[in-house]
Length: 286
Image (cartoon, rainbow, N blue to C red; front, side, top):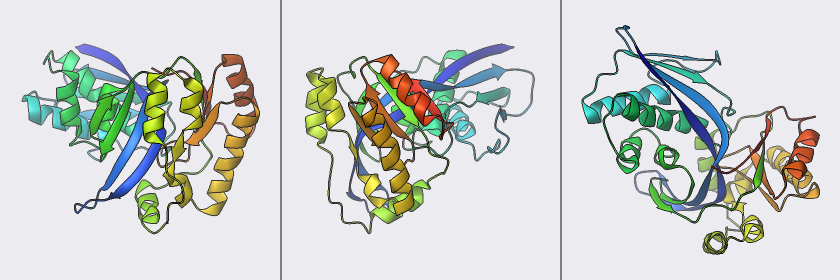
C-alpha cells in the first residue's frame, strides 16, 4: 500500500475581467491569480480495493463521478494508461465550498500532482496542467500555482513576478453564489469599471505591494444582487478600516480578501470579522 498527502491551495483573483463571450459559450477572461496558504489535504492511497473510491469530511459533497477529484483521476488514467481502480482518495476540506477560491479545482489539481508522484509517471507541471484543461477551467492554474496571468477560459497561463510577502485575509459570507448564474448575469450588465490589469502586473514587477492592492478589481462585483453586494462592501470596508492596503472579491465570490503588510493588523481584522463570519482565515501567498 502506497500513500501520499498533497496540499490543495486556495486561490484568489487579484484582478478579474470578462472580455466577452466565445462562440463555444465560454467567456473570455483576463485574470491575475494568486495561490494562498489556506488548503485542503488530499490523501491518495493505492490499496487492494477494486474500484476508485472517494471520501471527504463534508457529508454533503458528492463522492462519485461528479466530484472533480474523481474526474481528475479518470483524466490522468486516460492520458497515462495507468489504472486508478485501486485508488482511494480522501479529501479533508478547509477551503469553503462555493466561495470563489477554487477549492474544488485545487482538489482536482492536487490529484493530478499526487498521482504523477505516486505512480512515478514523470510528467512536467505543464503536461499536468494540459490534462487539467479537461477537468475544469481553474485546474491548470491550480496545478501550477503562484502568481500568474490567466486568459481564455483560464487555461492560457503566463507566470508573473511573485506577489511580495504579505498577509492575506479571507472572509466568506454565509451564502453561496452560483458561478453559471453570475456569468449569465454579467452578460446583461453594462460594466462601468474594469481592472487595470497591465498596471497591476507592472506593480508586481516593481515589487510594489501598495500599487498591486490599489489596482485590485473584480468585474463580477457589478453583477451581484444588491443585498449580496452590500455584504461584500461591508466586509471590504472593515478590512480597509483595519489597515488593509486594498480589498476585493475573489472569483465569482462571495469570498472577500484584503492585503495587509503586518500579520498583527490582519489578525485584528480577522478577529472583528469572525464575530459575524465563521469562514475567516489569515493566509500568506504561496
